[in-house]
Length: 433
Ligand code: NAP
Ligand code: HSE
Image (cartoon, rainbow, N blue to C red):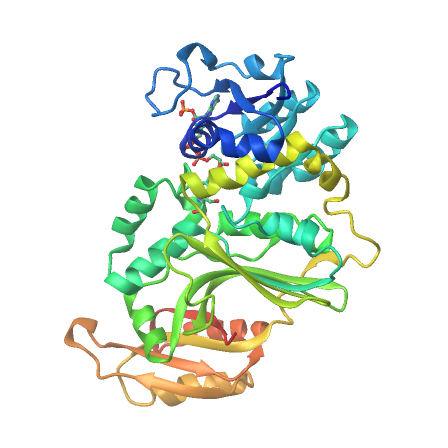
């Protein structure tokens, strides 16, 4: 048997503990795939006294990154600390000291990917990041390797497990938003700061990473238009369901005329389509490649062991040398790469609009009139009998025919500025497939 490969695990939280568990409990299986044993030589965390339920001797765990970066017996490090700092400095320290790095930290890659990739290449090292996008789904390998012959035309995904868990629990059990968020945190799905899950930041950072792989451009993630799920309530879900849709947080990127249209926002997805059937902490990615056509990927996008599955696969890839080969060409596309311009104006689609209007004569015609002024055509309208609890306000739900996103935005601003509206309207894209 060949000499073992020694790895360092930096971060022993939900994901890091899962990685140690998998490396220990599936050691024989992993050895067969890697051609040699992979052992955890060192681990790093903040609180060395914490019981993490893992089989790792106490003297192997420290708070000092240098126990990994400066140990010459360690060739691969799994960086499983979240956020930007000290994660960025840790990654630099590991690369500078000649370690190949595997990470699940999408915030770090979305923010500092270009400079970290450049440093890794300069040092002749690799960064593998399958776990950074869509947890256990091998979407990074799929786009970066298996579909390399394709020009990717479009990506649509449910990329945040926490948001999807919240939306599907609210929809299926009528659960309260705040209660489900706490449950998602307890299950280890949420970020250390769960605002990043529910405000769309996490999904947007993952979309930026996928765009790098698929289109060869590093799009600054903060420039991608994003809306989270904080404004989604039971009322919206009930209307969506009445119309034959579910609400999902959808990340989208598409290429047309050499430009990228990108957006992360809750959208109505048609019941029966794969995105609508993606529930709980599951993620999904649908994409269109020019040769392969339409593809769909589905699997757990958050949680300890699905994420550990992706991290350990990357460790094996690094050990056998596959990661180094892939990393050399990751995101390096040719002159066909679209300009890193993000433009949502060309998203021509149907919209769902909920207007909270005053219950008085002429309101419906005033609102439909404003939509008409903006040349937006109405497909259907729902207005239920007002309840006493609504205090004179009545929800009016309108489905439009396809129209430009900008025209819709202007029309909604116009409606909300009118004297017939008593609360801000909610406008969501409608995705039919
Ligand atoms: P977590 O449970 O909060 O764990 C973070 C770990 O980092 C903890 O062990 C913590 O130590 C350690 N740490 C933090 N600051 C440190 C420092 N200054 N020095 C040494 N150690 C430090 O986070 P997680 O859920 O495992 O997520 C880790 C990464 O994976 C994040 O980037 C996250 O976005 C990503 N990710 C998570 C999931 C998921 O389902 N959870 C899925 C995919 C990707 P202590 O334990 O001692 O505090
Ligand atoms: N907080 C993330 C999510 C973890 O809920 O999807 C997986 O990246």
